[in-house]
View (tube, rainbow, N blue to C red):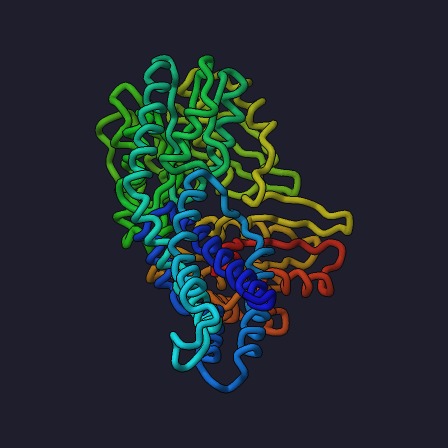
Length: 533
């Protein structure tokens, strides 16, 4: 084999492995579940422009338009160029190289390289085996074909590894259960909701840490395996309170975590149209979130946000229910009054069912953050903390990055960062916060919202209307929600010359570098479509 062919094979092989890495990354984002991963593929990811380039190269290799050497060289150059964005891609949720990922990657690579190896062995340089083209061209063509359907090899690897993963996961599950059972005095608090659960978890941890030795699931460790890892690696014998965030994308997800940890109390922060592509309906969202309430024992309690009608209308009879509200205080044991925002934070009053008033101040802004703080404060009160300790915990809460956090640049520009994950209610609140700034121009940068199922266009058009009412300049990023957002923005009478449409986040930053001036306020509302579409 010549050095020329070796280099060609290496470049194309690396390109194939990087394609496998990207597909495994998307598999991880979909909780390693083939059904979810398949739905992601159905969203236009089976055949993309990226894969069509590979198909075009395959046809070129099979044709006689160019000499064999030139076809191979051109294919290698294209693969090399395409390797760069695959290698340098930045994602909000990068691929975490867990042991499971390495197992899937190894099996996927083995499956994908089998035809590559076979072609080198049997066809490399042997023109007598193929009538139309030489062995090296066949090898590269098969490599490119494998890259085109790299998702199929990833799915095959997952199926092959199913019994292995089941055995490993059961061992981890049993070990986590053993640890929890050995700590009968441990207070376990479950937190779930369509949105707000991560922020509420941080707020509750900050408050309870004033009195208790507290552990919370870190980051977005809100899956069964994330919870298991937290228990096995971070739980200490002296831990008094375990705050367990519980995520879900389909029915049964919350119950699975509850069966593991047996929470004695919990918080349901919101019930809204998130992950409708996997849930199918708001009724399924509601029943799944309330799997937490159903798991709470009679001597426990569940804290429920009544600002969301599906949650307010869902009865709970198996345990004590404490309902709270900011915008819908009716039928609540706790509600907020006198909420005031400023660039430095917020002040608000919590009123309980007996009329007792409790004053709080926080560095946070936005109704959603006040609501999440209320849930944490209610739990702290229920666990016996005094008001002064709770107030200290609230005062020292820092803004959670990418969740309606406010920063000021040396150039006099205020940045409202709500980029973690946009939802209909949260985005409306974020834009209302933006609308309260009057010192400079108000700028909204957004690609819109995802995972809304059949309501995606409707809800993104509504988001556009909120942008039009609360912004002076709008920058729409990415084509995924572009038409709905633009339609909503312009329907409010928004000045079209202040509406900018860009292809990606980098282009939005380049545009802002020319637009910004001291006193301006920028809201970054969501970034998922730019990363994952």
